[in-house]
Picture 1 (cartoon, rainbow, N blue to C red):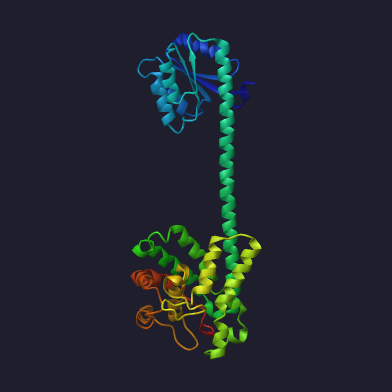
Picture 2: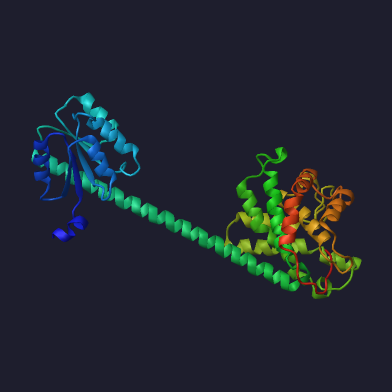
Length: 375
């Protein structure tokens, strides 16, 4: 029995400055519990905060150096001991003293001289309550960890699904190379820059940035519905072919909407993905497609992607042009795309151009195979 005593029996700490009281109370408790004793408040605090903390503390109120009220206050202020129930043992029977002790965090108040059956009953009851509270805390901690694990699992599945779908788009359109990754991180960098831009204060937050970053790789998912004879054509598209190419935003939105219907619920990153897929070819002045939206009618994530997409097209090789330098691409966007972009977003893009260049260089394409058509 003694070798398993630590595992089986709760531990009670008795704090009292009177040796006779320590002998009396510990003798009363020892047949049922492991007992630790302390002859002063500071000694009791050291034991309570040490290895193998007690499950319950019986605490005398009237002690020299540090009274029981101060000991209780310090116990409750320390995260290591705050959950240990405290029962005051005292000759002070005034209601005001009892009220004060309970306000400090004690769970009970036993008057001296003590009645052994009362002490044993109350210790037993409060240990049972503590065991239940500890169980609930452990269960809550387990459930919280399980929720975090499952959320992480769902997010990993989301990311894996996006990766698979965008990889499919890349196999249909070899031109993309690292275009999808570059534009994803351009969007993230620009959205983060806008968090401190006055016009977007209150309209964007860090959660939005995370959603836009997750959604951005789906911007050209509609291209999987474009016939190979157009998507893979080595040369400029005819007007009729370009009209077919211009259907890819609607195809992308429809594909994402079908996924939502299968899920049977609205998902934040899919909402943003729809806005990006359908709106990233809209222009600030209303001259874009597919709907001819203008100004703030264009969703924010679509406006972000419009800038990212055009910049990346300019610095990338195409069948009809060599890649531009970073500086030339910025100059072209500034001079030739005046009505194309949200002006405040474009200003922020120029402000963080060093970060944009770093992303472009980090994810530069190494495959120099045949290029395909522009959008």
